[in-house]
Image 1 (cartoon, rainbow, N blue to C red):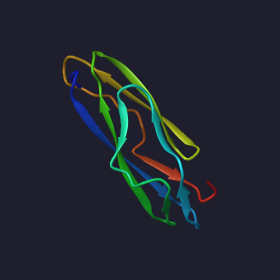
Image 2: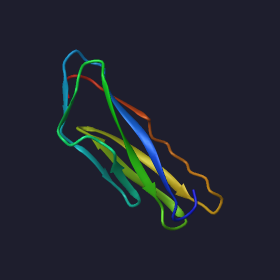
Image 3: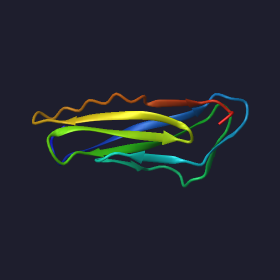
Length: 102
């Protein structure tokens, strides 16, 4: 993507267990990445249900960026590259599955 542009990447956390899960931590660390459009912490995901939100990426200079995205104790790495030709590479799962034992 071009320097100065922003991109919102949707994520969904699904509870595949048989008991509700309380999401008590939702965090991101890494330059250029922020969490947007999510419910207030803590929130509950019922069995078989999901909750979504967005991670916003805004790269300011031509470079590669990475961030650690965490939901409770599950972490994934997000990667993005700002180039002259407006392209973005994202290698993060759009769906994070959570067992009921979290």
